Amino acid sequence: MTDFAALIRRLSDAEIDFILIGGVAATVHGSARLTRDVDVVYRRHPENIRKICDALAASHPYLRGAPKGLPFVLDSPTLTAGLNFTLTTR
Image (cartoon, rainbow, N blue to C red):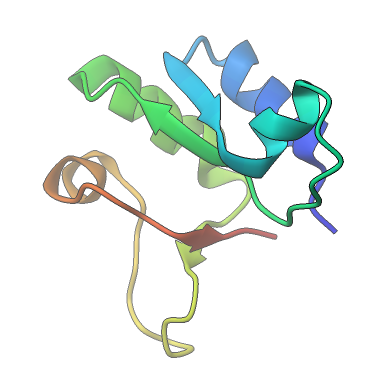
């Protein structure tokens, strides 16, 4: 199961500019909604993107639902080129 607090703390400790949205945000505000992921909107500034890549590297992010073995590296060029990523992590 995802350790939501640890993931959010990792993003916060890395001083990433982001907004928590979705089910976890609703839970923080008192909702009983259960969720299995963390949804964020992040500032698309080069330094912030680099911080995101560095913060998530230890979790080995991979595209959720992608075929096993499909090459994927979450780095600044990849994050800059895309808009929405649904990732799975260790």
